Every structure is written in C-alpha cells, then in structure tokens.
Amino acid sequence: MFSNLKSAFQKAISKEIDESDDYGEDIQAIIILLLEACQIDGETEEIEINFIKNLLINKFNFSKAEAEENINNALKNDGERIEIFSQIKIILNQMDHKERIDVIEMMWGVILADGIIDDFEANLMRRMNGLLYVSGIESAEAKERALKTSKQS
Image (cartoon, rainbow, N blue to C red; front, top):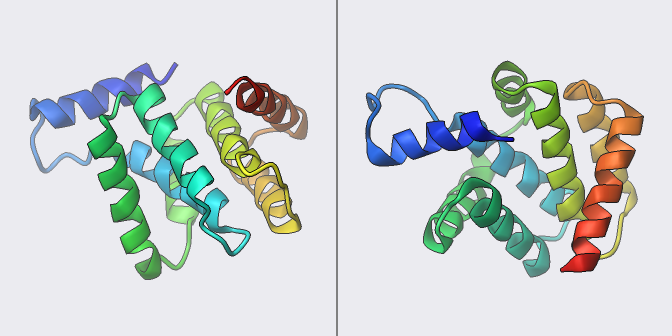
C-alpha cells in the first residue's frame, strides 16, 4: 500500500531524480485534502493537526520535522488556493482505487480525531466520495476502520 508514493518521495529526498520532475505532488495533494478535512468546520484543532502529522510520520515515513514543515507550508499556502479540484485530479491520475479509499480513510480519521462529525464535515466526505469515485459503502467501511484506529490510540 502506498509503495509507489513512498518510493517517489524517497527518490525526491535522495535527489535521485531530476529536480524538474514533480514527484511527491500526490503526497502534497493528500496533505491538502487532509487539511481541508481539518479546517472545513471552521476550526483548525491541534488534535486534528497532530493526527495528520502522525499519518505523515507513520504512513509516509516523514520525520517529525518533515511532517511539520509540510503541514506548515500547506497551511501557509492555503490562502492562495481557491479550489481543491486540482488536488483531486492529481490523486485520480496517480492513485489506484485502493489508494483512493485509503485517502478517504485518512480523511475520516482527521474528522473523527476530535470526536465530532458536523454537517460541513459530513458534506465534505460525501463530495470526496463522488470526486474520488469511492462508493458510499467503501467510504462507510473506511470510516469504521478509521473509528477503530482512533479508539485504539
């Protein structure tokens, strides 16, 4: 799972690829969607930011400093971004169906981190399901996995 994302990111870090290649944009797209899930209710809660940071460390092998830097850069650039559809396109072009379900699961994890699902968050997830071609059943299963993971933490 995410092996192609990890290898692309690791190549970018080790500078094995030409700097003109845009590797890692899929991971940046995920970070932006996770932050969207964090901020959609009008608040950027520390528990949700920490959840995203832990995802980056545990799923993508970021160091703590790299995770914080990527989150801070995405937050800093948030004001310049007027839409997330370009991020959706990156994910659709570079990820298979299973990986897109994993993105939905990660987004559910962020939303569930504070223990509250408000109407804005529920609406965001319905839209993300359609945009990422993930069925409602697949999303519900991803939500259950995210809920079980959050209870174990």
